[in-house]
Every structure is written in structure tokens, then in C-alpha cells.
Image (cartoon, rainbow, N blue to C red; front, side, top):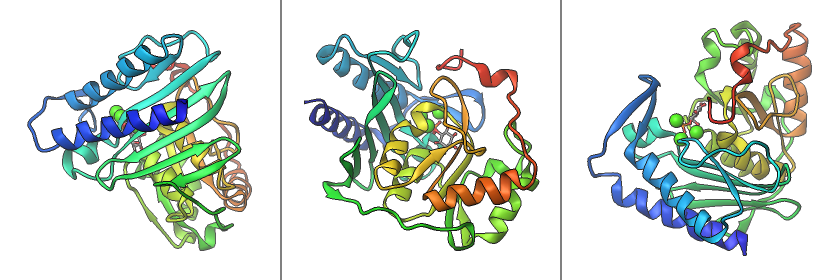
Length: 276
Ligand code: IPD
Ligand code: CA
Ligand code: CA
Ligand code: CA
């Protein structure tokens, strides 16, 4: 069955990373000094792609490192794979990174898997069934307003970005209980599902960053949308706002819309799924 296959696969990939983490490996720059890829990222994606192709040759795979050819559309079964989400944490901290895998069937995410490799914590969501952490069902998350929320927020909000002006988001930081920038989107969403943070906000994620985490969050009663409250896209980058229904509405209505912010769709938001 697909779920057990994916669990076995993600655990095998995690074991491989734990074996390699203290070895020396090649690191390359992609777009800049903060955007790196290691040979371990590529090897893990290769391992995952090979096993999926072997067992499910008709499935499509969209992976961050582009090992598999991306499909033309999202029909049929599509796997979203981030072999190491939080590569900078992997390199520098040797912890707080995850393998993130989502399975979409005809445009709907059916399964989400986020594996915190060093903590050996596996989060699994199945649409309509719920979210588990190491097999234990997670309860519905509590409703929070910004004023009583502990947030995970990617620090790029303070820099000029293509999504929203920093002045719009500063009051959220000021009004919340506190903010952290953990550096691994899928894990931050998993922790949201587990009630360890009350919201997640980032200016730029790709589908492999949030596809699995989105289902983890939704299956405990939460929501994941763009910073403007719109459904997120699976064909390019997007801002992400996630949390309880109350939190998401509070941010969109009282912070984003109240400040008159409007989405600015820049040409480079219209890229293909693998950034080409
Ligand atoms: C990154 C991390 C980071 C997020 C970036 C992602 P990567 O993924 O999830 O937290 O802010 O948008 O690209 O490159 O380490 O897999
Ligand atoms: Ca990356
Ligand atoms: Ca990622
Ligand atoms: Ca990655």
C-alpha cells in the first residue's frame, strides 16, 4: 500500500542521511551563498526517485533537485519531494532538517510525510483521516489570534521581497507572543500541526516545501494559504500563511488587508515547477 511504501522509503532515506552526515561531502552554490545543494541532497532525491520509479513507473515526481523530469500537468499521481528541507541547517547545525514527501492524486494532496531525521520524528497525514506523529494521532490545534500566538516566521520578511512590504508584517511580530525562524518549512508546518508553534509565515516557498506540511496542518483543523488568504499554487513559488482558522483570518483581515496590501504578481512568479 502506498502509505507503507512511502513510510519505508522516507525512513530508508533518513537512515542514509544519518550515515552520511559526519562524512565529507561536496557542497555547491545554486543561486547564492545561502542557496546551497550538497551531494547528499542529490543522492537522497536519487534514492527516492529510483524506488518510486521501480514500484510505480506510471507516477510522476517533482523534486527540488530536478532528478526526475517534471510532468506537464498535475494529473495522475504526482509525488512532491524535498530530499533535505533545511539544507543550511543540515550543513551547519546537523539537525532541524527534514525529508518532505507529498502524494497528490489528480490535483488533490492525499498523503503528507515529514521526517525529522535527527529527532527520528515522522509526521504522517492522510486526507480525511488525520495526522500522526510516530503513530500517535495529533489533536485538533487550538485557535489563536496574533496577540496570543507563538510564531515561526522566515526572517526574509524584514528584507524587501516580492510579496509584501516589511511594514505590513512588522505589527504581527510586535503583537505576537514571540517569533522564531527555524529554517525548514516542512518542519515548521509539522510543529504547527503538533501545537508547538501557532503560526507559520514565509515570503517564499516552493510546492515541495509545503505540500506535505499543508496536509499535516489541515488534518488537525488548520489552514494554509498565501499571505493574502488565497489558495497556494503548485506550479511555482508562493508566500505561505498557516495556522488555525482564527489566526489566518486575523492576519489577512487585520494586518494584510487593513494595511491596503495587494498581491503583486511579478514576472518571476510565473516560473515552471522546477524553476526553469
Ligand atoms: C528552504 C527552507 C527554508 C525556507 C526556504 C526553503 P531548502 O528549503 O525550507 O526554511 O525558508 O524557502 O527553500 O532549500 O533548505 O530545501
Ligand atoms: Ca534548496
Ligand atoms: Ca525546502
Ligand atoms: Ca531541499
